[in-house]
Amino acid sequence: MTPAALLEALVATPSVSGQEGRIADQVASWVEGWGGRVQRQGHNLWFTVGSGPRRLLVNSHLDTVPPCAGWTLEPQVPVWREGRLYGLGSNDAKGCVASMLLAARELLQNPQALEGRGEVVFAFTAEEETGGAGLGTVLPALGPLDAAVVGEPTGLKPCTAQRGMLLLRCVAHGRSAHVAHAQAAEAQNAIHLAAQDISTLAELRFPAHPLLGEARAQVTQIQGGLARNQVPDRCEFFVDIRTTPGMEHAAVATHLAGVLRSEVIVHSARYLPKSTAPGEPIVRAAVAAGGGVGPVGSSTASDWAFLGQVPAVKVGPGDTLRSHKPDEYLALVELEAGVAFYQRLIRGYFEEVARG
Image 1 (cartoon, rainbow, N blue to C red):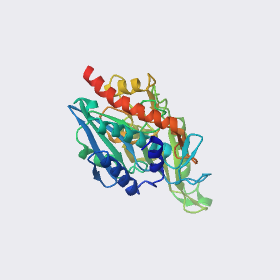
Image 2: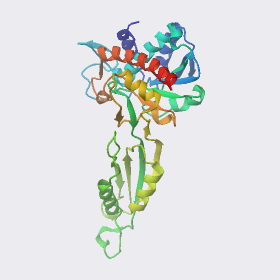
Image 3: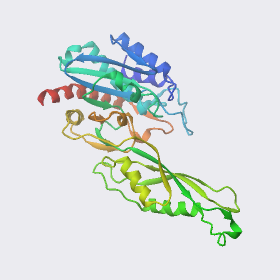
Image 4: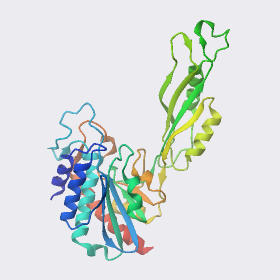
C-alpha cells in the first residue's frame, strides 16, 4: 500500500474521539497482515518490533475532533487536489499515523535493521482530543520506556518543549441586597469584585520560556447574578493558563490565591508542561533526522503530557495551524517526508544511544 493510499484509507474511516473502533480494527488488520502481533485495550492498540536493552515509544492518536462549520468539502470523504489530501484528520494526526505505520512496516519486514539494539513500541491510541481513555490509560501495559516520539503536525520540526494547561475556577463572594438599597445595606457586589480580579489577571506576567515565550492568564467564562434588581452575592469565572516548563501548577494556584480576592479552586491540573533536555539521545536523533532543524516549542497540548519523566519529542508531518479548521489537508510530499523522517529518527535514536 502506498503512502497516499494508506492516508486516504485512514481519512475515509471516521474516528471522532470516542468512536475509534472501526479505525482501530483497520489498523490492527494491516499490522497483523505485515506480521505484527497487536495488543489492544479499548480503542488503543500497540505492538513491538525488535529487541534489545532500550525501548522507544512511537505514538500518535487515531481520533479527530468533530467537523466544524465552514467546510467546502465533505469532511469525511477524502479528496485529492493538487497533491493535497483534504479530509477531517488528514493533518491532525492521521498523517503522523500513516507515516509511523509505514515506518513500522519497514521494520516488521526487515527486523535486522535494529541489529538487536532495542525495541520499538508502536502505539496508536484513542481520545487524545478529549483527554479520555487514551495513551494515559494504557501506559502501564506498554512496559518501561526509555524515550518517546509523539506524532503531531509540527512541520517535522522537533518540539522539545510543550505548554501545559492549568484551569482554575474562581469564585467572588459578596453580600446581596436590593439594588435600590445597595449603599444603605452595605451590599458588596460580587461581579465588581470579580472584575477587579480579572483586571489583575490581565496584568499578571510570568517569566518567559526560551522556546515558548510568556504564559498569560486568560479568563474564558464568567457567570454571576440572579436578578437584574439584586446586587449579586456570587460571581464565578474560569481562568485558563497555558503553563510553561518551570511553572509548577500547585505553586501557581497558591500564588493566585494570595493575589486575588476571589476564592481560587483548581479545576484541572493534569496537563503538565513538558520539556526535554537538548542532550538527550532522542532529541539529538530528531534534530539529525530533520537535517539540523530545531528544536522548537509547541503551544498545543498532546499525549506527551502523560509520559511523566520519559524523554520525548513531539514531531510529525503537517502544520499545526491547519488543525481543527475547515478544509484540513496534508500534502503528499509532507506525508512522504514524514515516513522518511520517522525511519531516520528510529534508527538514529538507537545509534545515538550506542554512541553514548
